[in-house]
Length: 81
Image 1 (tube, rainbow, N blue to C red):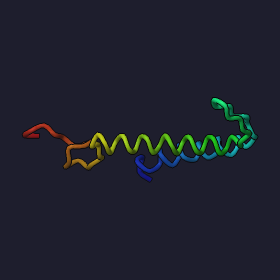
Image 2: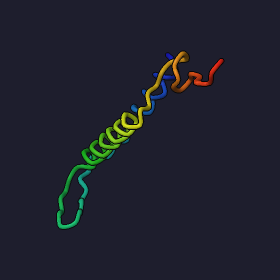
Image 3: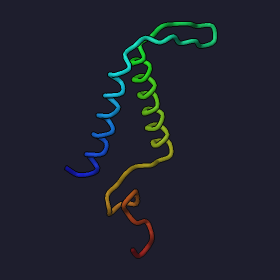
């Protein structure tokens, strides 16, 4: 299996293990709002929100990943190379 696939799968697997081990409810205080919610929901929700923010930032900055013939990571944008 290529590293490009194996490393994200390993990180995702570790993330799932951490999420599943933290199922206890926690108290959340935000300004005038108090609630008891499962830590699983908080970890999953904030992680998903962080992923969306990173994805949106990459799209707004025009960053894309291309192969060796492109100008993205792994490619060369220098003339004559």
